[in-house]
Image (tube, rainbow, N blue to C red; front, side, top):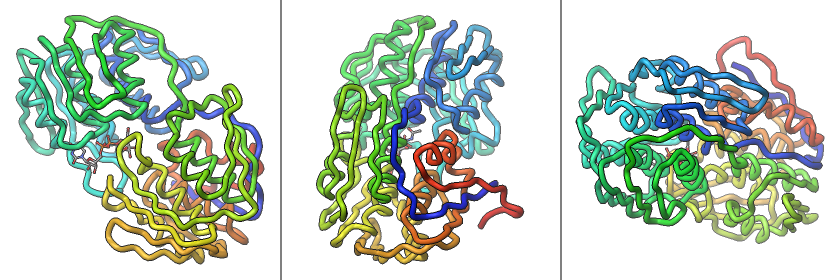
Length: 423
Ligand code: UD1
């Protein structure tokens, strides 16, 4: 448990190489189980969700070695299909072990997964799809017991393009008997990364990145090398921090087609961005301006994970803005904390009306989830005086050394241990 102490008034500017993507690496770590062989993963981020997923793989019997950002994972000798650790309750992506273990061994036992406190996060789409593919699912004492004698290919129509459900179905379908088609599939870049990884292992997958994915099941997959793509949400965090503090920033390793919706908003509020080779550069205007509506949605729409940073940013812009959150129901909790810092935000259900031109003042605020806490750090950089932000344990799930990252860009931020549990 720790908290950040941020001193406002310093520009976030300079060059930074964005780390490997949290949301791409978690499903791919689960997918290594399907390879039955050695997998080499490069550009791994040092974040707690990654490290906890590695720990789960070790407990299943995988042999893992690490050299800097490269992990070698040998899954040939797994000796367990049970994931009962407490960490499962904290990390929603652990649900992906269900598809991967079933694909590998036709059996899996998993605790009900948790995750950030950003609303109800059911897993009905995962489980309904699995049942259609021949998996027998029983719930006993909070654990899901899943097994089958045959994984069957099927035409799955997802009522909502869930990222996790699309990934889980891919993990299972790649080892199914016959063909699977996922209709209304999620199209996020992380789905494309998982499909690419599975293809390199010998999987037959077509159409990832579109709303219809075709998978022809194979009997066996093999090891491969894979390099994780950049984290588009970390990149957006950095762009917002620089825009809020008047700094110029250059990010290396960014694929701009993965960030179209957020870059579009940056342009509308007056920021000038450019792609120069492998670099994305951005300069903010003297005064950010608002008067726009941002509506979150599945890719390629505006990402819900970037919404909290823009809520912080738009408190500073001239004008009034509406944010409509369509993906998760409790994703405005950071707004109450922003108001303590002097922001004026009206929340009405899934809508937040943000009145701009706020003069943010440092105070003590409490984060309750990963991106919301990061958004409060950004507000701290733009505020007058010192802001104390509780909730480092959330931030560490998805940001590698956030204090080092911002310090290298001119920010004044320290991580201190809390004497007692925060909030
Ligand atoms: C993933 C990302 C998360 C991101 C989210 C949306 C990872 C590890 N996490 O989460 O950062 O915010 O995509 O881009 O990649 N739903 C159901 N039933 C289901 C599954 C989902 O109702 O079985 C609902 C959820 O409650 C939510 C919506 O669908 O309202 C989107 O969820 P989903 O796309 O599945 O997000 P995650 O995979 O959990």
